[in-house]
Length: 263
Length: 235
Ligand SMILES: Nc1ncnc2c1ncn2[C@@H]1O[C@H](COP(=O)(O)OP(=O)(O)OP(=O)(O)O)[C@@H](O)[C@H]1O
Ligand SMILES: [Mg+2]
Image (cartoon, rainbow over all chains, first blue to last red):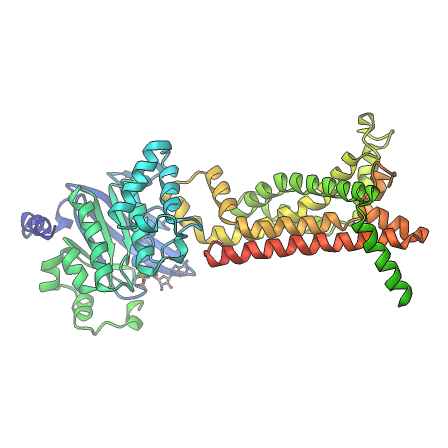
């Protein structure tokens, strides 16, 4: 899995994604979002490249979750636009995306019923749905818990369920908001494996994390957000080795605190 | 106190004897009330869910109206249904006045706003949690309403129970449109009112005891169900 990722990085060489529009699957163009009289997302222009794993980093309150929700069309931008394969994002395009929220939203039903519901929303019925749901549980090693009420699962199991529910919808891109926050190393590993397996099948990934180790393991491209703006973007390893912007440098040194993040 | 004890003993004796008149009254009470609650749920659950889950013009007005209708005085509802169903009323040709159907109609009108308003509250809270996930999964409007009603099922059981409580204990509306006719439209509450005024305290008290037991049993059953739902984190 990791070998595949490394190859991709080598392929990309020194070129920074902003240099090239080729292979852009999802794009923010001059995106801004205001709430409560504040500009929370400020003129973000950003191509997310197809087939790549983009990691979105930034301090608390930088606007990472907001940006993800904008890109998924859950909230409308105050200015700018979100483009999916070069066209404005709409209902149909959203079906090609799957999002896992920072706090997993699970229905008050069994583990299996949660997956069946998501598949049903995609118009899947009967034997096909049964087979796909069973397969999804299998890949997340949740088969034994199929009949368990989803909301009594442990935090790690809930996040695993939220992830396979998203994957069961066969999205072209996964939008993941801190999918392993508060998980132990083994559970984190299990989730990373699921994400990488999907990526190896061609699913693009946009991942928010606070874990530098995870960013290194999971990231091809980096977007560093600070105060609602993109402070730096480019090849992840290169950015982390030689950060060009002051916020990323400060963040890597542990000097960037949340009180400065929104200034 | 001695008098009360004797009456209570007689009343319980009456219940235990399986008196057919008593059974008939209880049976009709349950039939009318359960029919009304079922109808009220059939209308009020989807209505409340739609108002709770969607924004549309007139939503606030509808909410205010539903909340106001929750406190409808039963006698006013009884009077209105009477006017509709009486021989000279618009629906007089149906000949429904003084039938159990008329009582079901009156009780449905009383209970529907309760079910709808309480459902709206329950669904609105749950929708706040689910909304973005629904949009993300691409769930359509009908799918949302059904999913919300299903996921709120244990809370909604309590809502239905509140409706049942209101209907089964109600006397003002059913006495006006039912007329308290022996063997036809006599239910527990109307019989208690009538028999008490006639001084037949044994029968009145017997029905009172039955009414109380029904209320307690139904409440206990719903509480037990809810407790198991809470354990499964379904509530
Ligand atoms: N609807 C809203 N109204 C007003 N302010 C909001 C709203 N939504 C988010 N914010 C603010 O926008 C900022 C960015 O929020 P966001 O959740 O995107 O941060 P984040 O980068 O995901 O942080 P974290 O790492 O803590 O998850 C925060 O300061 C938050 O308080
Ligand atoms: Mg966040």
